Image (cartoon, rainbow, N blue to C red; front, side, top):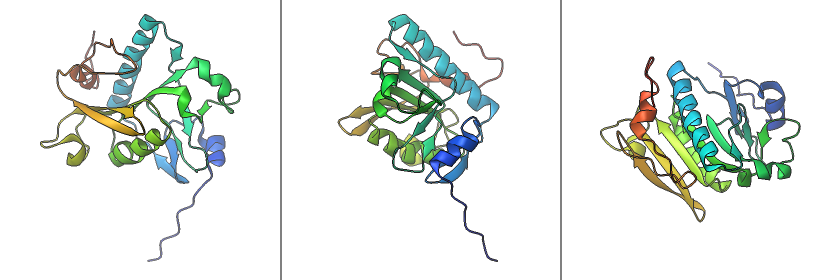
Length: 208
């Protein structure tokens, strides 16, 4: 059996054809289906809501866009983060922003959160590396199902939220589980536990 070669597309073609389609992102020219589930969307929405409360409370010039792509310059890669916090004062330096919600500069981004799904390797490895190259200060990996590899979340596997804080050019990781209070460099007064986020995936669950 002869397998036909994978058809790769450019990042510009991806933005034109799939820029508004939340089901896909692009990695090295390959169209990646994100396979979001209902609980996945509940978790992402809850994280965004809690961070928006902190943005208002701290009165910072940050905001969370409804839709946004991160385009890695010089590559055919465009990530579609579940939650992204942008610095409004830096948008003037973004070459594409006035035409489309695409970010190219890491300095515009304060925080990215990815909710882990079946393609968890991208969240724990590929995106970790690329977000560090972009010098994004803080990256959350929200593994509410505990499905990541044991080398990332330990053994026995359990729901884990990993906060990666950029120190020089590398991420320092801290793992949070159950009732651990999250520690964020971007939102230092955040009062939120890992379990509160994990619970948001349950239908009918109401979090304070």
